[in-house]
Image (cartoon, rainbow, N blue to C red; front, side, top):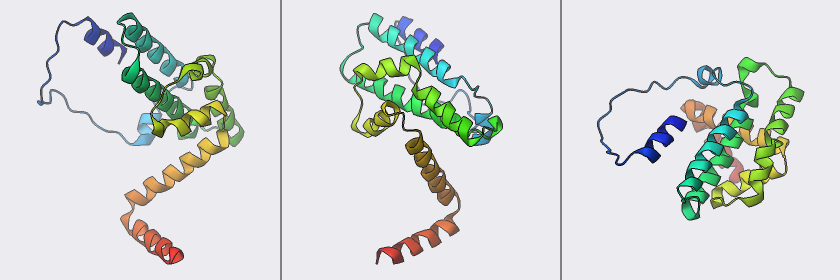
Length: 169
């Protein structure tokens, strides 16, 4: 990603095409998670720091670009924090909470929150990070995992919605 951004900023022109020149194989989440090191937040911070430097050096770190950058950074921090659930790490519950807290407590993350401009849908995520609300993040993750489970199993999803509908009647 850093290479691509550098190339874009140093190119005189860019051409877009609809033709696919490569195929991307989407692995199962467990397989993908295995590739992430426990210091994933350091990689996220390094990438976004480099990207911000490029934006500033080209005089475009403002307005909608800043808002998009800031929103993307917040989402990346939340994604890094959500790595606590990586099955290959085999973290205890206490270690999971500590991992999330360390992500939220990273110096660059705290400094970033001092001057943040994000989309409305990202503001609740900012609050989770700023408040270092480990419990809320874990609850949000469990809820998302349950929704994904239901999406994958339509039979159970159908029963769930029928039962939920009867409770609301």
